[in-house]
Length: 304
Length: 282
Image (tube, rainbow over all chains, first blue to last red; front, side, top):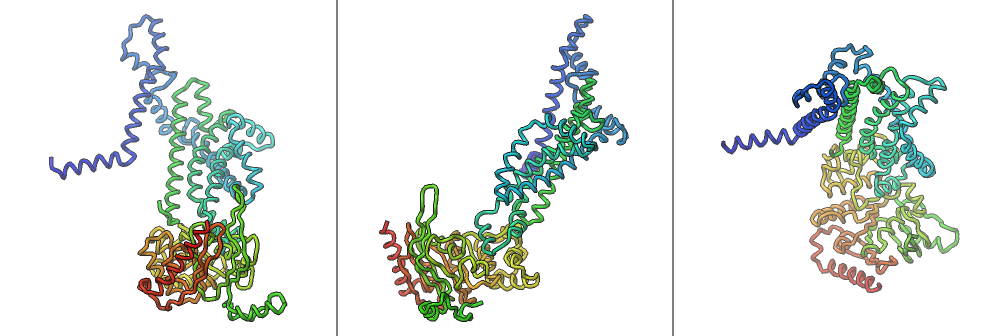
């Protein structure tokens, strides 16, 4: 083999490994293998029990085949979940109550509303905390304490209280997403708004700049990279919030309701399908925010 | 805006101050018996002690001394960034606070302190936006002062695309852009390599000749101070006080080669003696 061809080969493998596609693919294959093995391990006690009752001689191959094809498995095999995903995403009309796309849409709409509200609330709190020292002392402990309460405990309370004053539907679910979202935004923005160093603050002071001018010309632009780091966390949390909000209320629609009905009827593949859908949506949202971050940072002329 | 154009102001009514005004008609900064003590957790730090100094309009005056001698603190007092504990200071016959409010000075920091998300010309706009100048005026000023520091053509670049020396020139242009009477410079070339520094020293001297601004310059480099200044204030540390005030009468059109001359070395050695004397104190 000539040197040139060796270099070419090296560059092809570099392309594969230099990017994220190669490593991610390997990881996916590993996870699928472990999943299949886990499916056999977790489902076999029940199957072996049944074989023994029927005095059936069984082989390892047979056990594996049966374990991967059970109707109500402890852990469904990847292809069962894939079949469930295909059935509920591709084969069903999106308006159907059995379509995962429909349920994902329901969850997404309250997650996005909560994300927007949480971001606004988080930024407003941060602005208050940075500018008014009394607010920092009075508000910050509450902001932190709010996150120590398990969301599962407070979610039904919020739904019930809001329901009692006549607010139902999308908004109460969004409130729970908001509750989770505002925290990383507040923490990130407080840090970002305070990121201009002493020299830059002195510079603005020497110009006799007003507080509003310092805010709009210095603090706000300086906080943008911090805001995006927070938004990536917040957008993932917004989905968690929306799903959790659907659990205690016995919601009729949404990924959370799919998780519930899956566990009522022992339909584990349904649960896994909903979980995978949720994580794919979440990863996509985080990637979208990351994309927006890159575009914004580039537009601001900052070095990436 | 020049102090010498303003009618003489009777300061407090008694005859002695009237005479003072007559004598120091062009005094732009007047510091009397100024003391400054910082209160810290480890106890008070006496940063400045009994500072008496008059700076005339049009002076290029350098504060030189070892680290921690209070030279930057003194500059910050002039800029209203620190408050004196005792004594008086008048900047253009006003308190430093009022002088800052009337935008008497442009401050150049140790680092360029440019906003990374703004282009070079937008960085020049910053003080002009704060001061409410029209967009047209902002553009004209940016063009004029970037040309003055030889940076025409870099308007649309971002700070990270420029070298450290160029960035510092932008920050000088920014300080000049709102046309203050004074330029306060805190070790502006301290972080640059010596070749760039020499180059910028020459440019700054030309700039001073062109603009006739009063420049107060903090440095710890003896050759830099001697080369640039027409007056050098030698300071010593803890408490920071003035050891010597040296008038340098070097020719106005001097170039870097003057550093090899006899006069230059004589002044430099007097500065060095002053610094050593201050050092022997502690």
